[in-house]
Length: 459
View (cartoon, one colour):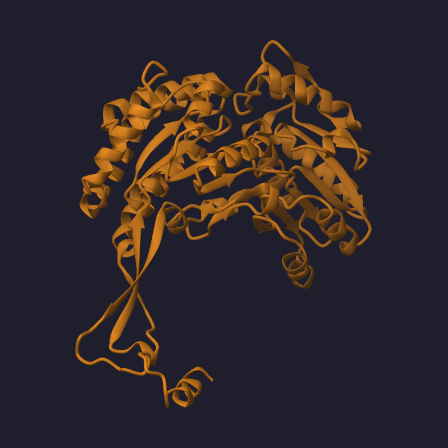
């Protein structure tokens, strides 16, 4: 573990020194480190789950599936790494002969990963997999808001990795500021839009490239032509896992008015099936991370008519799964990402109206659409812009390693998961190799009499 008593500059200097040895570029070394990371998670999974329970009261099932489940990302990288690192040959035009052109992926150097508190383990490890696979050194800053998980991450990494290669820096806002003052080769940040702007501003001073995984108000549009039971179940699950503290949770419902009443009844039934009559007593429902977030969410409960839930307990930071109806577009709950177990419901008359409403907001990280109508599905894809789209389900699109995950506009910059993670932490170096077999003299002076030939080549 590295704490503030160690100078961040010293860690950075040592990592740059280690990177300069070229050891991290070796494919065998990268594979070994990925396997070491996987084994470290397996060896400490019980402690990780306990830390997540201490920070977020996260149910063991959710902790295993949504946090320990990052093991799948590691396995995917191990399986594909040799293929990812191969130079890619590209077409060479006639005028460049004799020669061949390639794209060589190479590591960036020393990268900084700043993790959030809502999925504090998974969202630390997932980008790191890409950084290791691409051949970088890394400094990791876990969130101080989830202190137990931060501590176990530091403990695991201290035992698993040389800090000259991968180091964990714990601390609060001042530590983050100190890190952001340094010159990294890439900064990967997951968190809110407001802090994302601060990260980008700090990075700009050093011309450091950034990946910003942010959030926003991810809409969930429900057409009348649906399977009500499946739609309700998938919405309720996607919204209320981790007590709603998910960056791609459905932030609000846009429901076709003809289906609104039966859909809401079905969602209520699902919530009762999931968490019982009193979710506060359910072992399967989490808690809000801290008092500050709890107080913010309690204020948002005043934004409309509560038709289910609304119960709170400040002593345990509990907020019941809550549905709010009769919400206006200018209500406080519609002005910020909710990031909690509160689901406002709006209604619409036709799909164009729903699309217009979504397009008048900043581009979201995710957009959900429920409909059997394939023409409507196509309209959603063509007429809206979002980081990702999931049709007839929620959240599940992030579980496909082949799909890059990232935002657009206010919801983020760049993407990761699978090969996208490798690409994010790599520089695609363009290389042209020429031969000495012969040398066409057209390009050399004197140019007299050569222009007509050039015109024929260029067009």
